[in-house]
Length: 386
Image (tube, rainbow, N blue to C red; front, side, top):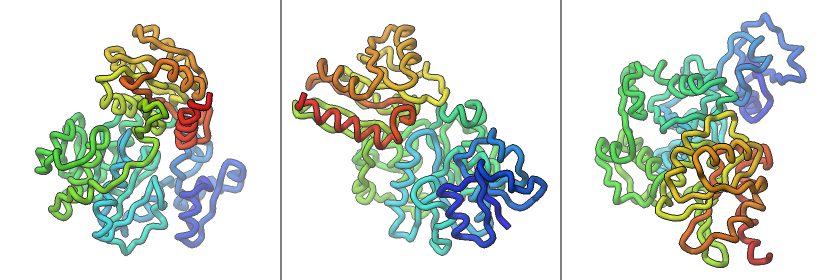
């Protein structure tokens, strides 16, 4: 008997895969036997302070259901870039029979168990509940403050990201940021500061890779994965990968002014990475939304040395403007995305760049980051009609 807390995509996949599965949510948790020791899978979106989680026993992740049967698996995590890195690795290994899923695409319960390689984007939420499953190859991108309201603190978030290292064994490999070089694990650790380090370690020629940061690091990690498993560096294949929209997506308005749709930047690290490619220009930056309780100050310490004007939107616009005042950064209280576009349009020219990189979730004003990004592009494209 398997019980699942939650009735979303993860829960439905478990129910489809296994027999004797019962799903619960807050509305019918009164039917749950609190004394039972049956396996209880927690859907990753449910936080540890939820009443169901606090009262239930024998909690596990859906990954644990495959701890003994999972094929060679590559797990990818980090604060930013994990989706792109996961997709790039799948792009490189699909001809080797790999399948891709986890936190994106196909739920782990519905992946083909006969496939030789599983490539799994894995969130800190999933890691929190894992008890025994582990990767064959763990790729950790840099981490910074995120999901603080879910985990309770940055320390807990950090602990979740490092948890796979606790369970990995000799013969397995972890590629992790250098700051964690002393973290104890039985896995073989490969540490890096940046993409140049990885190029040196894996003998990858960066000039052959047609991506710039922040996607360059993702591409190098993907190439390193294939090098580890198959001793191949496939420049031709990686260069055919197309980055998803809403990620440092460049486009031009009818006056040929450059705009950047980086709506998927929901934390400060993503925004800092997006700005890095444009620091030689005047930057009009749209910030704001639901920042999930994160500390925004490191981002403003970075921004203060650039030629940046902030346009504050979303539920945390007052927090943003207070930091602008503290660091003497020019700002505008636009409050709404459409007004920020109009405010920027009155100043923007062909030598500057306008960037939506909010460093916050969209859910205070939009159903998703994708909707926010599409609306942004629509507002820009409608400028000539004003």
